[in-house]
Structure formats: structure tokens, C-alpha cells
Image (cartoon, rainbow, N blue to C red):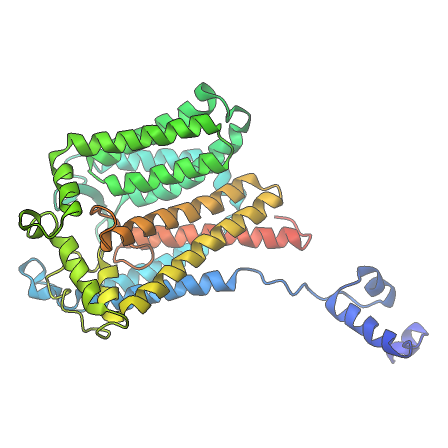
Length: 421
């Protein structure tokens, strides 16, 4: 039976018939679709942000390639003499696959569940920061005790705390919204919590992670509407605390002096050794680099070339253009984080919006510090480049953070379609 025979009508003549077909095909008029007996097709809106996903995949892929390139000569060093030249490549691939699997699982968790368990996740992360300091449990490397051995790999509690503080700060801001202008009830409890985290991190020591966590907490509180004067006091307190920590620590002071004049004979072979070789790597790379695999500085001249200073290897092998592409990809992640957060807030989803923006602050702050250190803009800090540097805990938690961000975006799109989350 034809369409006209079934409904006893004929298609209007002229352009109206084409308009009716277009309206029905695109779901533009629900009433017309119901009258005509045609079921509206699904909205053309995508389920998730494809561009964000592909940028993350590109950074993970770049990380695998550059970790292999940066670590291929490490077995020539006595410290890694027992390693094969592909050892770090295999491990990084495993970390990326694990991160992808955990990320997919995390994406399936509703944002309301993260909100519900935010305080418990924060407490668990706090306990992990205490455990890592216990002798014979926490593992020390280069004088820092930051890892808990888990047999096949090591877990770094500070990476878990970055995710935990992002979620907890958003949860706290929503719960204490009416007290955000109060010092005792709104500002002080969060300041004490962040101060406790900072104390534990400085005992490791891991000042770089503390700076990122403090930036996340302060940023989420600011976006959540904390009183301007209180926020100014928080910033002043944070700056004063970091200044005092640097001044009270002789080796930190020496690192600052080395940063200010890395080519001085007193520092070039000491505290500024990494920085000088990083700058040499960028200088050799010029505009387009010396070619993939052609780095000289990775030949055991530049320490930690596969972790903290992987951007220097990228600069040497891929040049200014390669570094610029990496910067633009991280810019896209941060931009999309804030856009997704703004959309969530417009949909009256305060917790989800603050979490999304918190993830953007996390990636933005850590990327800025890592790149600043590599380029000599900031004093040396032990921070990796998210999604790119070698490391199991970092890759795993970065993937979870991206999954949570994409879940916020997914729920935004469901609500904008008229669905429920």
C-alpha cells in the first residue's frame, strides 16, 4: 500500500512537498511527524566529542613514539644495563592499553556517582599519601619517596590525588555553596584539606604535584563563587608558602639560582645540568628538527629524557613546528574542558561543570609547568607531560580524567536532546 493510499491524502504540489519531506527527515517538526504518522529520526547531534577524543589519541600515540625514541639508548647507561632497548616502549604500550580500558570503564560511570563518592575518594587518596611515606613500603627513587610497589608496576598516590581533589573540590563547592562567602565555614575547611595534602606531598618531597593540586583546588573554588577577598588571601597565602618553602630549603634555593643563570660554571654541571642540555636540544631542533630518532641529547646526556624532559626530545627531533603542534593539542583539551563545563553549568549541572573545568585546570597547569621547565621559563620540577611522558600512574589517571570529562559532555548532549541522565 502506498503512502497516499494508506493515509488518504496526496503530497502538496510545489515547494511545500519538498519542505514537508525535509521537515520529516530532519525531525524539525514533531507535530508534523506525528500527524503524518512518520517516526522522527534521531537527532544528528553526536554522542560525544570526536575532536577531543582524537586529540587525546594523537597525544597518546605521540607519547608511545617519543618514549621509544627517548629511551632507546638508555641501556648504554650502567643504571639501565639490564634493560633491552625496547623495554620502555613495551611498558608504555601496556600503560596506554590499560589506560584506555580503565578510561572506557570510567566513562560508563554516571557523574552523579562521582559526586556521591567524592569525599571517600579523597580520603582514600589521603591514606595512600600516608602509606607511601612508611619505610619499607614506599619506594624511593633519586631521593624521593613517591611510589608504592604493586609487583608488576608502581603506583604514584599523587596522581590519584590530582583526580580526587578535582572531584572533591567540585563536590565541596556545591555542598557549601551558601557558605562560599564565609571564612570559617566555606574557605577554612578546604584550605585545611589542601594544606594537609601539601604537607604529605612535601614530605616525599613532590613540590610539583603540590603546585598542580593547589592550582586545581584554588581554581575550582574561584569558579565556584568563593568570596573575592578570601580568594585573594588564598593566593597570597599560597605564594607566601611556596616562597617560604624555597627560602627554607638550601637545595631549593640553589635550584632557583641555577635556573636564573644556568650557564654559570657553578651550576652548569650541577643543578642546571638538565636545563642546559634541554636548551641545547631545543637549539639543535631549530624549525623542523633533526628528524625522528636523530636526537643527540637523548644519548644519556639529558637525564629523564623519557619522562620530565620528553618535550626537549620532541623539540630536538621535530623542531619548533612539532612543539607548536603539541602545544595546540593541549590548548584544545583545555579549551574543550572549559566549554563543556560552561555548557554543564548552563544546564544547571554545577558539580559536572566544575569537574570539567577542574580537569582543564589540571591539564593546563601541569602542561604549563612541564613545558616551562623544559624551556627554561620555570625552575626544574619533577612533573611529567600529561598523556605523553612515560609512566603508568600518570597515563592511567590522565585517561580516567579525560573519560570523566567526556562523560560530562555525553550527559550534556543527552539532556540537550531531551533525555535523562
